[in-house]
Amino acid sequence: MLLNPHHSHISTTTMDTKMCRVLGHAIAVLFLSTSLASAACNKDDLKALLSFNSSFPPRTLYNWIDTEDCCSWDGIYCDDGTGRVTSLLFSNDDFNDFDPIDLVGRMPPSVGDLSELVDIRFSTLPNLVGPLPRQLSKLKKLKTINIYNTNLSGPIPSFLSQLPALERLDMSASQFTGSIPPSLGSLAKLRYVDLSRNGLTGSVPPSLFSRLDRSALATLNLRQNKLAGAVPRSFASVAFGGIDLHENRLTGDARFLFGKSKPATSIDLAQNKLSFDLTDVEYPVGNLDYLDVSHNEIHGSISEQIKEATKLSYLDMSYNMLCGRIPSGGSFGNISSRDFSHNKCLCGTPLPPCKN
Ligand SMILES: *[C@@H]1O[C@H](CO)[C@@H](O)[C@H](O)[C@H]1NC(C)=O
Ligand SMILES: *[C@@H]1O[C@H](CO)[C@@H](O)[C@H](O)[C@H]1NC(C)=O
Ligand SMILES: *[C@@H]1O[C@H](CO)[C@@H](O)[C@H](O)[C@H]1NC(C)=O
Image 1 (cartoon, rainbow, N blue to C red):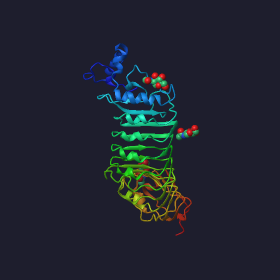
Image 2: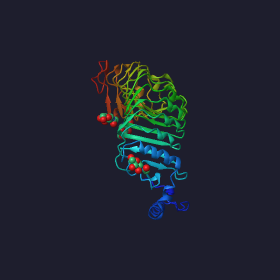
Image 3: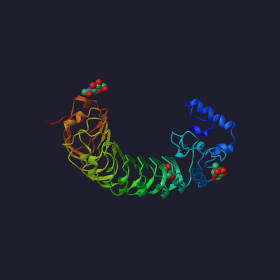
Image 4: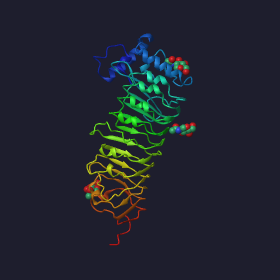
């Protein structure tokens, strides 16, 4: 567990080193009465946590011991200064610093009563089911939602737009369905959205990231859903560091995602029904490392300007309707992985030579 100074009742103001905290913690555990120790837990937080505990089958949270400070319980992290619960982290990923946990059932509404929460993680919990509780909308300080690899289902709730501090939303690899609520676009700090590997339908809301500071890098991952319609043109003015729309049913133009001065490191538009002329597309020269536009209906040719994207290490343009000479020479020859197969009439290395 994280060691917090308030685990001990010895003043920590003059004890800055980790060693002293460990020592203080040990002294507290050894010598202080249990009533003093449990007094450290904020009573409102404690009430919510006891309700959370009772929502799961007996022995689920077997080492939440009521004589110990709730801030020392598995999955609970408190602010050193205020003693309030700020993180609720349940995960069977590698981050875990406690035994594997199996949360069976729904996410308890009492999570919404931990009013100082900044960070929640429920990940790799196959038996966590049902929709997200509406009470989550009470968490006005919440910055990070990591809820992935679960069997949670239902919609991506529009009440998430009532979380003004939200910066990072990961609800990937679960059973979420329905459309992406346009109201997420009202969140001015939201810059990381991963809703990949769900069963989402409808179109991509143009409002997404519309209130985000234009200089802030945005990340969008909608990979492996059933989203249809066009990529919103409003995305032309979003500074994507990474955008992944792989394996959806998106149609039309996506040229506005490109541009010489875009900051993107990674662009993956593969396995859609995008159809546009690639000829005049300028590739981002600064950071672009990964570009996959394969399995679409893209036509035209590949501009020599792509050679300016010197950091490119992965390029897949296969299964489109491209024509003309594949650029060669310079750093372009350095791309470690590239595929131009199954196009209309591309030619030149690594495909057969051009006729003229
Ligand atoms: C948590 O719930 C279990 C029953 O599921 C109970 O035995 C245990 O005492 C509870 N823990 C706390 C801290 O109340
Ligand atoms: C969802 O539940 C099914 C059936 O229990 C299980 O096989 C699957 O691994 C679960 N999915 C996730 C992402 O945990
Ligand atoms: C290709 O890669 C090598 C090794 O990383 C590097 O030294 C060389 O400058 C690169 N060539 C071009 C043209 O970028």
